[in-house]
Length: 361
Image (cartoon, rainbow, N blue to C red):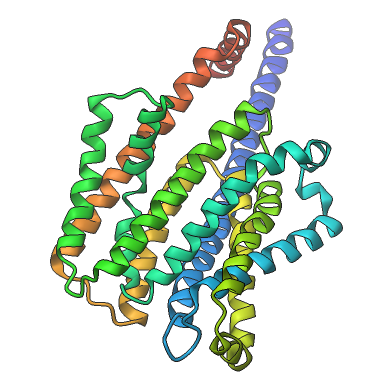
């Protein structure tokens, strides 16, 4: 009996210790999950608010009675972004991890980013000018078609493999965009063509930037890329602004300069939020936040500016969001599959053995 007691007591202590360890692990995991959820909500909420407020602010300023000069407003955005990027880099250089490499190869970086900056300037100018003719909701509906545009252009350039499965998913997005465009009551060709030009320029910039910068071995972080791109966009905008200068631009700026500067600061803050979102959140969270952001922008357009959204457009928007969600999650699965295929076999076996051991515990 004494021997039995002496053997069972240590076993009960071991079991109690194992239970305590398991409970503490569960508690720590719950705390970690809560922190992750809190961080996702905070960053995602900031991203949605800043993005939606910038679009609404641009639309408000482009009113004929305020500052209806898209070129000047876009140039102000780029000027503010350039100055604040330099200031931020001076204060916190750690936020620019690839800056040292970019500065060493600044000639190569500028050679590639200069044409991208010109495309970006064109995209911003056309997008801002489209607010003079079309509603925010309608322009947002058009922007959702970027997914299909990028896929088509990627297939032409050989960056993606054509598949009917992808075409079927993108057909949902295109069908939704068609419903929204056909349901627009105040359709204006000038606004539509400006928005399409903006989207073509933006998609071209993104694709060419990915190909050129990766091929040149210049994979820059978001803030470093913005710091180089902003002055490259500012220069052609300033040249064009000087050639088409109107005295009314200066009068309107003098009358509304606090709002114009605040609007430009909003644009810079959006770049910071985007960089933080890409760095801190998962791909799934980014997709969900993007869908919520688009919904908020459309709803804000209806509430703030009184834009009429027809029942057909409401149905079309739901169809668009469904297609984009399917496309995004399909791309995430492709990336995860590619990552598993390129992962070393030994690392895969070690991870598998660790998960098996954890399950046994």
